[in-house]
Amino acid sequence: VEEAEDEVVARAQAGDVDAFALLVRAHQTRVYRLALRLMGNAADAEEVAQDAFLRAHERIAEFRGDARFVTWLCRIATNTALMRLRSAARRPVESLDAYLPALDEHGLHARQDLDLSLPEDPETSADRREVQAIVLEGLSRLSERYRVPFVLRDLEGLPAPEVGALLGLDPATVRQRVHRARLMLRGWLWQRLRGDA
Amino acid sequence: VITACRDALPLMSDYLEGSLAEPTRVAFEGHLGICPRCREVLRSLEIVPAIVSRATEVDAPDGLADEIVERLRTTSSRS
Image (tube, rainbow over all chains, first blue to last red; front, side, top):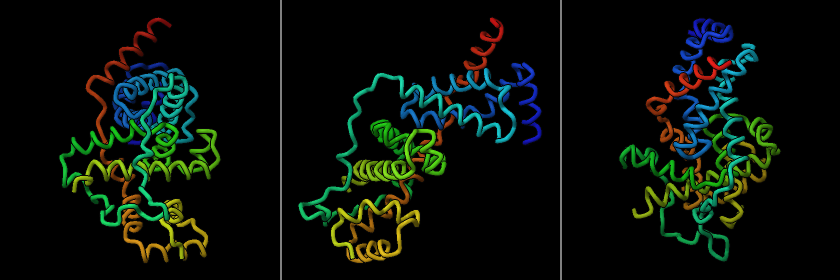
């Protein structure tokens, strides 16, 4: 399969639009998912995915085959999303700070009577679409300051120094923001999936 | 042993990634031994990425590839 893709890439590099169309169809879901996670909503994700493929087409001559084509494509999609996030007028985002663990004046959990566990597999206790909607709403409400490092580190599996290089942050700051994102998302998911348990 | 949850919470991700220095790790585990709520938060933090990942494994919307290819052809025919 890899060899076949190399041939398709070579044809696309030679200007064959049909070959590039094959690459679009093969990787559209991967790129769209990445964009959805980074942008936190479907409308922006679709635009980022489109722009990323158009940019990849413009630059396909620069692809040297050092990495897999999909890795190169995802790098372009990430940069496209970051540029869009940086240039967009900042929408006021309702903070998820309220979903951090509540502590009392002694720094202990304020409610000792509540089980703070998340269900291991929420999709067994709630409808899959409902869980998707809850998760997407949580991601979209998470400020991009936390969402982007979380997505790149925890969902895309990039090492903290690589995430830092993409975002202009030192690795320690990346780790702090990922941790805070996990805590806020944990609280959000707990409230929505178990809060009334 | 860390007594306040306030001091244990910031250490949780580093603990999960195995990057706490030995004395801190021991003090943190001491706290886990006495605090069921922090054990629950720790276990939850560990599964948050998997829950978010699974829930966002969605397919590209219908028509996305067609729209991209159409834009490509329009751009290519102009140049």
